[in-house]
Image 1 (cartoon, rainbow, N blue to C red):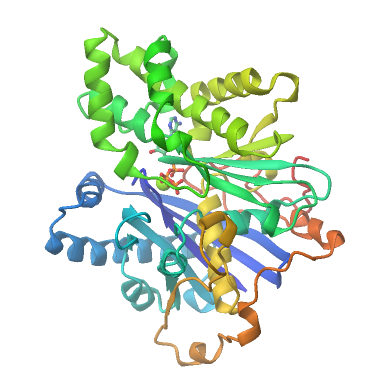
Image 2 (tube, rainbow, N blue to C red):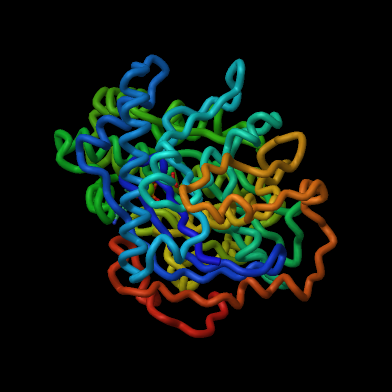
Length: 443
Ligand SMILES: Nc1ncnc2c1ncn2[C@@H]1O[C@H](COP(=O)(O)OP(=O)(O)OP(=O)(O)O)[C@@H](O)[C@H]1O
Ligand SMILES: [Mg+2]
């Protein structure tokens, strides 16, 4: 069936939309990208979103932006449909992650809040919409994050290769897939900051003119302050064992402002600070692998916006080489697989919506810390009358993900093909984002 996944991450840079065709059932799920795009937020929307990411955000603004983003998400869904020359009637379901404005899984009581009203999305698109994926996991005592590891496992587990998927969005997170391992073998957690600090420094260094250090140009001109880097790496979050997740609450504006002050006191140039923040992201990834993964992966696929920052990628390679020597993983761009790095998280939420639609859980309790597997999200029906009869929830579907799946089936997802229908995917579209009839991911 055709689904649309919608995602806006911590960077609040814009909405990623992916139109995919999914068939089969775990572990034999087939996922084909049909089209993908990113609709950047305009400055006012981005400012409104970022202004909500604080504990004392006004309720009126929260309500307004919730609905406003519902419209933006719906428009992204309609745009990706138009790109593929399809109509809402061709799509069974939307999976919308929404926009996280606050993530407090260790709060009292724990909560996580994603906005972008699914009622608006369903009304504007006339497509049933699954949203609010994280709440069920938090209600089960989990962090509500990360949720991408199960889709990662479904798409990328391999009989002989140990892989890691390293997403570098605002926050960076890893999914580790041991060779021939079932879902219970997945290790996944937020490694620490991704682009969030680098973005903050680039914005300060340019008086707000830059939203990010485009292609790592600023960091490439600077020198890392090793003393400040060591101090940053001593952050308590980085010592915390998984399950763990983090967000802007920890590494956001206040952290960036403090870091800027420290850098000024130490006489660093903005370029030196950008280089140091870039090294912080890279070193926290390498340290996390050394500290919390059972063994180094053989290959790491980098995805998310940070994968497009060549300075950051170079420094990640250096820190992994430093941490693991000859056993350091091969570092590759996710686009090399034939799937789109920029659309990966949106695809993941389409997969999770597909699982929810079929009454199957989407969290990995040992990853999130939840007490049980949970069917994720709330389904908002659309006007069309037939759709309500379609979802089916059987009591047995709530069983835990089975560990005893046949290894022979584990490769099937890896034989999926990628065919972004047009070359108009707006961001980080791989050269391979064109029909590629049979593709074994770079193995
Ligand atoms: N060419 C580039 N050079 C440097 N940084 C880039 C480049 N392209 C994207 N980025 C960074 O990537 C960010 C967007 O990445 P992405 O959309 O993956 O993050 P996100 O929205 O926080 O996602 P998530 O939280 O879901 O991982 C931008 O805000 C920017 O910081
Ligand atoms: Mg984004």
